[in-house]
Length: 158
Image (cartoon, rainbow, N blue to C red; front, side, top):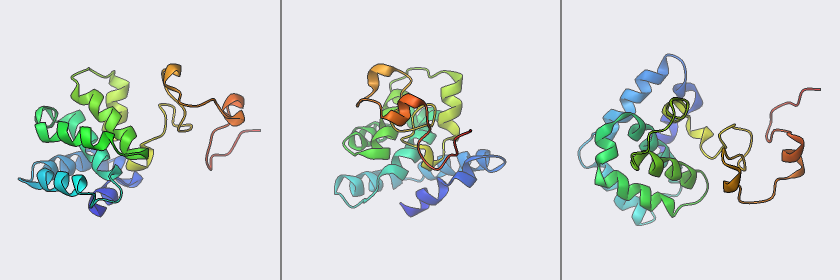
């Protein structure tokens, strides 16, 4: 799955690389038998980090109707829901896309250009407890969240 991790890099998800990356991801999806092999490996526990797979399927499903109708993609979404961390976050988004719900244009754009590193960040990209719907917050906010201080290496304006 290291190829998918490399394709998910931030540098390839922006600018002039973005449309080319979308084509590559879709082409890889259409390789006969590949998704079945990936599903088998994931189900057997041979995949240590399934987040690149979840990211890849999410990116493909957003732009490819065939992928949204593919039973293997639906099966993979169910399998990935049993994961944790970034893979589960991407699987949740994938399940929404596969449900036929039409995401807003902003969400379509966000999902279609999301680099692998952004999976698991909330809608605002501030922290992992940042949900568009406050009812989906799993834990009480931290003191930094209450103050509005972003998590991570970002600098705070003075």
